[in-house]
Image 1: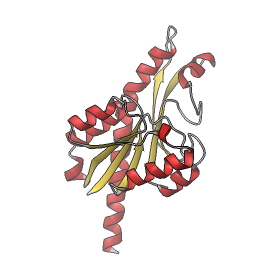
Image 2: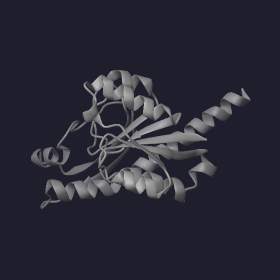
Image 3: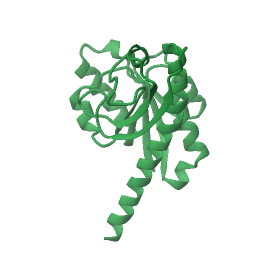
Length: 203
């Protein structure tokens, strides 16, 4: 069984969308995959409660308890590795990861970003889109690299920017699309891995 580990910092709505898609679409049967654990850098992250209610293992690696970013990432990697992950999905995980951590999970580390990358990497994406007068906004699922909000794009979804939008209303509209494309991108990646494994066995 391929284990998926999801990292969160807050409510974990994208995490919940992935968990629900995995159950509804029977990932364990179709793709040989399951959400094995949810890990947060914040002890008060509300998403942890949802994960526990779903019977998913949870852990907290509090970044404030570590003297450096490297020390935190080392502790986080130890918690992640305990579940032997095939994929690690960042879902509202509000920490910039060190190059060493990213390299450790190269090809297995995914993120969802609330803009149509490469536009508006970083923070405050919705307000920046409004300030620039954009007519469309959206979200991007991508592989994580050492360069912030870069890496191979796996999925995107666009939404219109309405004349009366605020950063908050635009964010809410984009979030509905995030909940759709993140599980879809993960399922496609798992299916591709499954097909590659079959090819390797038959060659």
